[in-house]
Image 1 (tube, rainbow, N blue to C red):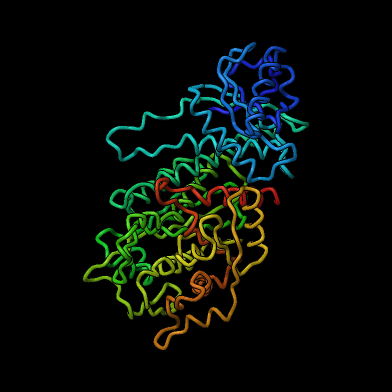
Image 2: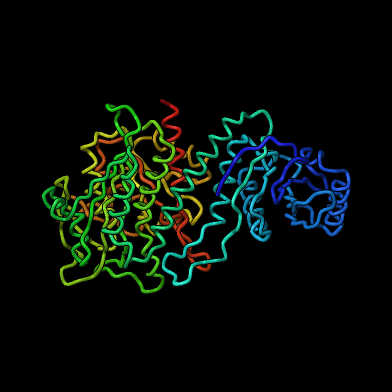
Length: 495
């Protein structure tokens, strides 16, 4: 879809559909006042009728409006400034109605809606993401492609207030680039496990290297064995599909500048191994690679934005299946770091592949390390499906992620990382166990990873509750690409 900024008066607008806000009970925003008098009078009558019926803030699609050729969508808002959540709901409502119009072009005057502490560029970026989310269709594995696609081809955002056109155009570039990263993440995650294998994920990473600032290196099982990645390779033993370690380097900053490292869990299917998961909803375990997919999505976004930063993406990718040679409860494995791990539950495999990937990341001498993983069901119990969990050893990094989450509306909530929880990982037979029991499962999983991040300024994102949706709306969300992209934008701006 094409996006642009417009400063045309509303009476000169030639798009197919005008999206105009109104305040309850029946007051058009000042931007609409340059419409023809007969149009304004007719719209006022419509709003009065809606108000009389008690419909004070609906989104209305109007055809054959006197005085204009376009369709008009009236978007109801409160008289007072909206909060972020209310504005995003407004966008979703508008996109739902806009899809019914068959319009190919539209102008959004929602830039004139007051949103607390948010400027026009923020409103534009969020509108682009809402539009792309509305237009997204997955049909890669369907014999007949989805023809019920939104016909919309272009959206123009009316320039509001004193914000510069350049700043708004930057918001468009950022919104489109982030949307591309989210789409790539969703496309990969929605693929079934028989197609999106570790080798397939590696091939997608190699495609990203077509951009001049990205290089991709793929390590196979022989390479990993030479590096003594005993934890990662132990997980892949139960699968006939060979594991891969995917390494992507984006070099947009100074040559000697330490990179940000993003380490994403890439379990392309997780049956639990010998500690087999229940059969119900096991199909959704194709989404256990969403952390890894989000790293690829962020690299795609970086390539489009050309941010002046250096970023390394590391994705350990495997399947976790039961087999005669599969890892067993009670087995002890030796990680790349030399630390030994007693595997009490083979379904706690994500931390096993991540720990070796984190140790491998040391060679890049990163300035910051963030790992991203659909790691624990306990995080869903703690935070539901609204916020991702964040824990870390470096509070300034955690704070930066919280700030980026608040701005992007891809939010996180900090959980404690304390020595008392680490005690739960004690083992009589190895340096540590891979689980710490049922209590505080998200925290003990992070405590496990913390043992492999002593040399880093490190944070951990548990996206188990936010990476995909179940039920009728089943599908990947593309989170936390927006969060991570905003973190990197902030990091680049901080210089």
